[in-house]
Image (tube, rainbow, N blue to C red; front, side, top):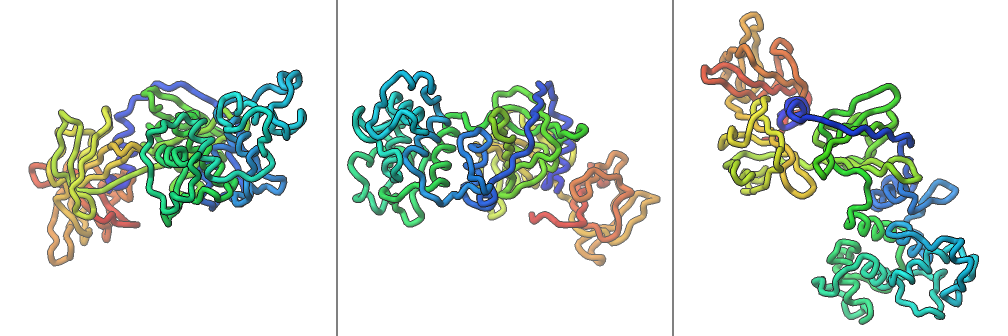
Length: 438
């Protein structure tokens, strides 16, 4: 359905969004991801951190995500992400805090900043062991202190809970409860496990995300990307409700659905998150959640809809205030929807509904014959069960999700259609590539 597909949403709903935009021109080139991270599970964490200048790769162009990380490397990563290291000119006049941290050590600024902030459970005058590898238990304590996790966080039941040192037990529970660290599929935490560079990036990025500081721009597209010379413009409704227009290089790519795609291929209502202010290249992440179903009821006063999903399960969702609604290819309101309407819901990350596209499918089948002179189609599930339908004067037609004219329809097209009160075709969705399952 355009509906269920998207360009109807893209065109019909776009006209319903007013854009008063602030223009941001971003000169940086598109982000080039480390060659060994492109298909690695850590990519969504490593890429935005690289754009912010928090992590770097090796001269060979790789990140080496499975290499172990030292305490000093992890501390530096977190301090760069969450605070600022002590300026070198200040340290030059101060004695080292730790006995194994020489005045010229590359990580001294970060390590001493972390100590000043209370993130390190090490006493002044002791060894910090910066060049040694760090364990998951140590990282949990560091993350809990840096993130300000409460000690009362519910404790997950790890299969190896007895192996977690007493000094790290609450921190491990808090770090997992806050979403900064994960347990393993077998239910273990593995407190003595050595942290890898990929895991360090994941902890850091999750902590930044929980503070709303991982991305500079977060919102959703209110219009299709617009090419302007050697750039492409994104019209974005920010999470705060303001509108912005951001211009990126035409070569920019977005991480979308587990793969890189040109930014120009993003769609209206896609959610986007961008890193634009870091020393690294621009990073764009895009996401679209969608669900199909059949409407049970809409309650405009509560801003909610209830529907049966594709498995026949009854579900209810909140509809975002101001969310665009279309029915049979035309702007509508929640109150216009009727029980039995087929739905395509664009979902936001919070699980609410970003947009509703509905259609009443009075007619389904294939075009077996067409008389375009008289504006009529012979439609049905089979030629023997087909009948003639006249097109209304204002019939809305979409073919493979794109707006089209009635005369563009042809034999063999599969379609869904809604009829007006006189029995004429009011709305037609035709498919030549793929038929939505509903």
